[in-house]
Image: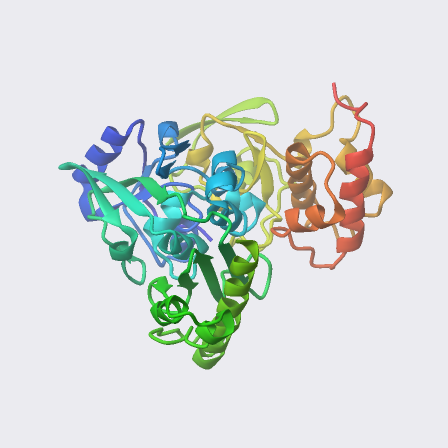
Length: 273
Length: 157
């Protein structure tokens, strides 16, 4: 399969990327690792006229300890997040989950910023960053701004980024208890998207693929805060969700899976902490 | 657009469509047809090659993205007429049946062993999660990877 025709442009700097997108507007798409966008283009579900390749912006690939939070460059690959010593120590949930994305070849190309900006509710890292209360940094013509992860995901493949903004950094606050984490996902084949997934950190519970955006399981969190056991809290996992029906699962099955996976995740997180 | 890649140590410059995929560049421009197109959806791993030494699925990389970078295909592994240890291990352990997945499997294992020279069987199985064998010949493929990891590294040079 071959994508429809487009013009390829390689950005040499963030400034150049921003000026290219300002020039081409809605006709242009940023390309990071390309492992979400290129498959969509091959299926002709996306047909941008201009591709702005960010692959040369090596200064947006980093993990750095900033004291109260860890700063991660948007172009840091899943492979590098997975193998980051800083993240393994400070935010093991994120390092582990990055190692569960796709397969090794995909992790050699896919980036954390690309995954977040793509905003697929079936992807792992959006829900993980929701559980971690991350902050997204975006740069546009008007300068830099911070977006709370809770406001970032606005709908299926829709984010709070403006068309002329570039996601540059993800800031992850250091968890109160780094060990109190779990990541669960249920797939048919190893490399598939999760039918349902669940990320837990310090009593925050986020769900993969239980609606048009990644979701916080608010009813579970409220039950936990009220002193419920993991099993009792997990019984609320499907409340407030709107899971899709598709070839892999009915809505009722996804709701069942959410309760099972949240229960497992809460049990594992509390046994670690 | 003009692209400039180093493929198996050889520089190749060509004028290609902006939308050309790396796998088509390798097969149709560089005339290196060992790399197969399998699923064409980033799932099966038959098109796996090394990009700057790391395994990638060449059906999901643009030739333009690889311009200025180094690509290694299975044709580039043997040195001085000697098979690479991973190739030899596939031969010795009967790591192939129909052979369609083999170039991708070999390249995925070369990359895996570079990152983890002495993996456990479980690590090999997890490391090959992105490569499908339509003959389901996984046991011997895993044996080949483990044998290659223990092989003396006398071949290269």
